[in-house]
Image 1 (tube, rainbow, N blue to C red):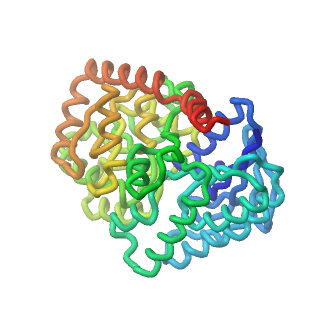
Image 2 (cartoon, helix red, strand yellow):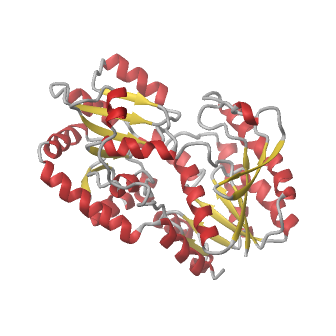
Length: 403
């Protein structure tokens, strides 16, 4: 079968979505199918297009043997919402050219959000006469409304109409979490139309190794116990809890928080950390996949946080799985689907969201008990190696799709 993947985000950009989509594309290819990707010129999260991609409207590219058709996008750094709309819609229109340049397709895999890609999806369906597999990684606009990030009634109404039309046009709806499936079935979508494609991990990449002492020295982390958060620093993550826990652990200078990533909330949280004068919090930008492995191997603990909000019950953060695969005890600060997976894995500890005091206490307990940490790490790695490798997940997904 020939599959076109339509997504605004793809490597060499860094981020959870980019890693996930690349792994899915590789696994589809490994199953014997042809896959091409229509995507934007790299620009996330910096809002800067690298020099080798600038000044072009279209470019044929490849990564890992996967053909890519890149089209122009209006890059934006953090800023006003209308600039974000320009970013989204510039790709909506330019991607139509990428779809036209791509080869014939039996199926078009469409990644949403951003939800506005639905307009490109409608044209691609007609142009290629292909079936649409709509992959939902986050319910939008529901999640934005639940978090209080979108309040404009006109925008909510229009995007809700677009969302409904996308669900109707899609041949299959591929959901990243059980919570998404539950929400959509409650809204009247036939269960037979939906398939499940959860987050996974490559345990051969995220494998336990001794800490890279060169990296440790460059970060001045000698003799430190590192609590690592690696991923998007957005509002839903509720990463304030880590700063509050760091403040409570001032008297333990051997414990440091290493926050690796980027997102809309990072400038505000950095300002807050500066105001709190936290010497035990270190910030780093997103790291390439090949590099982030080194950071997990220098960590003592892996941290995953979620704010308390309604739709968090159906969220399973992708950052959960690399920590488990790296045999690092995971502290999951949150509720719902991700917390249930964490508890089932036996690879760490689950605590309520937004509870800084319990987070600080848990960090102290774990760092004081290396043997317990070793046991938790082994259980976590065994669990994801048996249940959440990309090859197994994608093979099952393709089987469910019957393609």
